[in-house]
Length: 567
Image 1: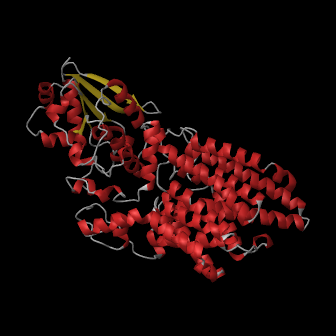
Image 2: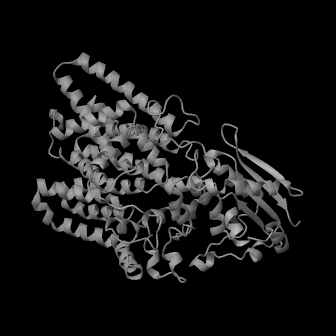
Image 3: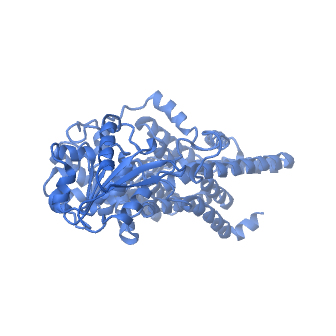
């Protein structure tokens, strides 16, 4: 068996890669961009730090002329992921799929890296098993399919971890350890866990290496690569009296002037955070797999089985411990916990192999065969759990038991709304490609309406999704795409139909949300009656046309009213 795996390891790895590619890329555009993934993707289109919100501003909106340092980073995250997405958009065009592709490739790459890490920590078979386990983890597939920063940060963190392991054998690899540590931090600050774990391991296991020349040079390279963020924060502190959003929260700085809606603070280690951390894991994996992960962490931490007593046996539990402490201090959401996925896969693979090897050596073949059968059934169920969570249009069974209801995104229809606007309006006719400062985004309603279609939308619509599917055309294409309540503030006593007709607009559209799913639960309540009146106004206007866009269940999600103003 061992010789077969050794001879065919790359074929086996290729098969695992194909399964991973299917689980990650299949129906990648099934659900809309709906949360922070919108904030990242929107800004990546033009590599500008602008969120179209007065409540979370940035250097782009603070200054009439964008200062040179403002493009070194972003006000709430480091710049590398934005830059990578920007490149993807330039090559493939702007779409829902191209927005997610960088993270999908990072997720696939992480699975391949786990194989090489497992092989170096233990041996070939554990590397392959760890890659397979990470492939079928529901949580890993989910994390690779949404456009959060974590998959990219994890990809570079795993490279960092791999070169750290190689550096323990040949110190020249510590240089690459430093390079990838810098790239990981340039993707997301929480990736610092890999540096902390690596240096802590050296402190306990081999203090001499802490003074190794190549390691020190590698750490200098880390600082150099991360230096754009350092410069950005120093300049922001000079201009505004605080650092970027994440560091301001970390150091407890006053950010009420620039980011009044942000109330988070780091409260330090908390028992409640530990309880919340434990509760957060429920539902991220199927219950049988989660049980196996917990048991394997205990087994690896205490080296219960002979196969877990290797030279680097404490390294995986140490990484997991550092991450759990980090989350216990900072607090953690589902997206952040995904950093644990590859280390869970590695420790589970090592424990399963060690347990199986122990049973085989003790001639417990019957027990071994029964357990193999049970584990195969568990892994098959995890694949079903994965598909049911990430791919099926209609989930089967009960949330928490048969799919992860806290990970599952229902099938939004904002992408259908966007396709309709592209197909039926001239929303793409005036690209605004050279945006250098805030002045380039200001529109004149009268001048910019001439000869164009004007789109008004229900301001109660889901804020994140409408920002991506509607407002981005007002930012990057100089189209008039405006919320109904915003228009009412600008024209309190003017009939906007007459205004746009006199301005020379071709058509006037109103997008009204009828589905509770597509309505922003926070913003909607005060304005629902106003939006209903606007919809009635359009419906009663002479020559009004209406188009209904339905969701997967056949329910009307949007009504789009159209008035022809000038032929």
